Length: 294
Picture 1 (cartoon, rainbow, N blue to C red):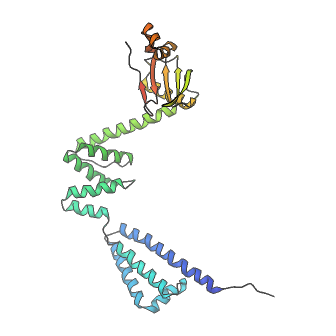
Picture 2: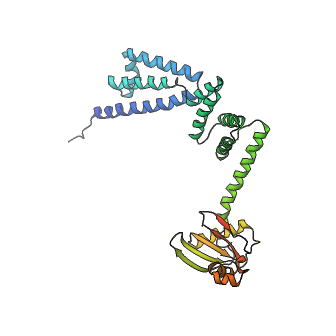
Picture 3: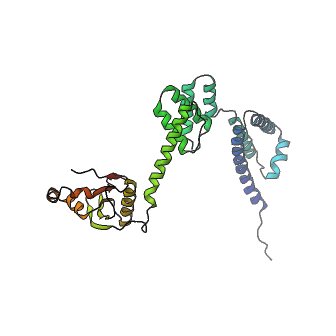
């Protein structure tokens, strides 16, 4: 009877390769944690780990007790793990960009600190309140309102509200926030019109333009110049989406469409063009309201 081959050494070899990788990955994650807990507990623990790892380099009996049960049985693998452990722990003593900026701020070198804070903010999806507060207040005190507006918008978009001083700056921030929310709502509104909600309309003409793509001339009899512009915009966009057009002109009367497309007809019917309401898509994603015609 033939027994299947079983090679314990091969299993031990695989374990010996996997364990170092897992340990190195664990040390990488642990180092990030220690950096976040500095300068007290994290620093002391990092020092303890460095001393322990350094001692293991010279105490082979300790190495055997620690690594042998894990299947890490070669000197090279052990030294790689110990070397990387010490290297990762030493990284905890390297100042982060935020700590460097904080140090500059504490020394009174605010322009340099704000420059570093700005880099941190621009690279982060969730910037810290303290950093945003310092940057916005610094630019406000410097009179650089363009930068104030920019970083206020960054804070608003990230949904991070810093406690700003003085009151004038706080009011400016709240105004910018209200404008941002209003614009956000306005951008969403055109998408809220569905096919069932559209008023009755008629596509008078549809043509493929050389520049601008597919265009439609649309009659909406229930509309007039008195129809709110927001409503005109929503309907124009919804019709464009439904008809698969890049641009749409909407009219309240058929005569207006004729006047806008025939100079002779417009001359004979000077008031007809007042039924032209506006255009969607001539400027991408914008609605251009018709001007009053004489």
